[in-house]
Image (cartoon, rainbow, N blue to C red):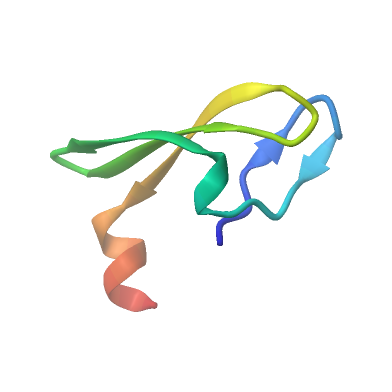
Length: 54
């Protein structure tokens, strides 16, 4: 599960693995490309430091 911001909802939404389109590795962490249940397609970034702290 992850909770990216969706501008159509105007808030963060809880999404699941089925909503992932792609995961791209970057030097800072990962970029998640997702499709919200409302149809919005967007990206969110997860940096390595946040993952280590969790």
